[in-house]
Amino acid sequence: MPLHVVNHPAASHFLTILRDKSTPPETFRRVSDVAATYVIIEATRNLAVEPVAIETPLEPMTGSQLAQGIVVVPILRAGLSMMDPVLSILPDVAVGYVGLERDEATAEARTYYLKLPELAEKKILLVDPMLATGGSATHAIDFIKEKGGKDITFICMVAAPEGVQQLEDLHPDVPIVAGALDRELNEKKYICPGLGDYGDRLYFT
Image 1 (tube, rainbow, N blue to C red):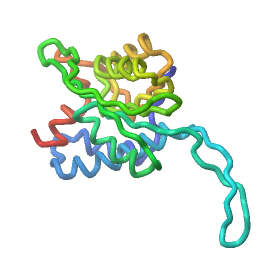
Image 2 (cartoon, one colour; image 1 turned 90 degrees about the vertical axis):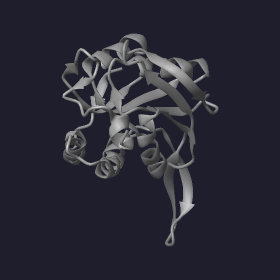
Image 3 (spheres, one colour; image 1 turned 90 degrees about the horizontal axis):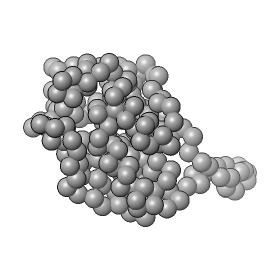
Image 4 (cartoon, rainbow, N blue to C red; image 1 turned 180 degrees about the vertical axis):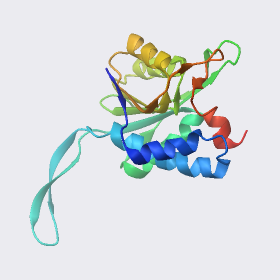
């Protein structure tokens, strides 16, 4: 599946604020919610709908409603920053969690928590702000597929080409929606120009 990068001037504006190292934590948290909302709206543009008969105050009409249950799965911990924007714009969303942390020496992902709801026949939004090496996203998608999930979209704020390639190689059926595609990973496997460690900046750690 091809990578889709959000093309919206306001999304770029808010992402620039997140990138700025002088942005204080309280502003970072607030702007993170807004920026993520733009990316999530774009990622859910093609959700399946079905007709529904309703009555307005003036007359009957046929509207549309979502035709598929939705599950959001944040990759802990930074992925939690994208969960609330999903819950605020979509109805009746189930929530799962995948706890992965990166070994700073090897850049490999290690699992420390996994809790997923029923996934069969659901639209699954896997969210993590940063797609760097693709290791965490790949592991999370593996878990989701093992539990019966099939219709998966990976959503992030910033992606590196290396991480995109990793997902496209190992999970070509999973579309990627990103706020931006950055230049590369550095020797420490951080995205450049990037915005630093999203979780550290979000939680002031």
